[in-house]
Length: 105
Image (cartoon, rainbow, N blue to C red; front, side, top):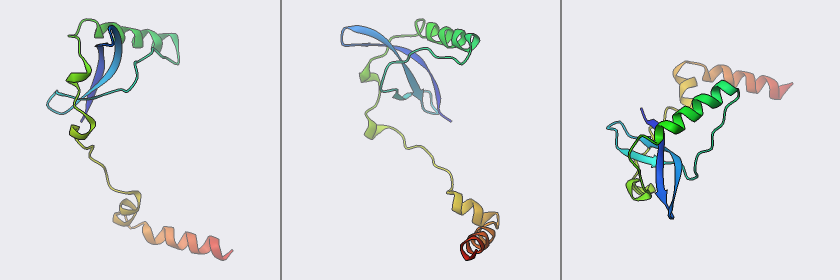
């Protein structure tokens, strides 16, 4: 499972905060393309977001060089397709029956 947090980046002579993603071993795997802006659907959520952003100031700085290029990033594990889950659960024939009934109406 991939974890994430906010980190301060030094880039282009200034500082910004980005979302950083870590692999299962805790190594930096990726980061958001753009800087992070606080957002919340309530004042409480906004406060929590600001607290997480402030926590980034206590962590070591990071730079783009600390993030592996896209070709080196681990591939996300994908689940099964909806069709294969339906087949595994025996629902494929029901879907086919419903499709044929609605097309013949």
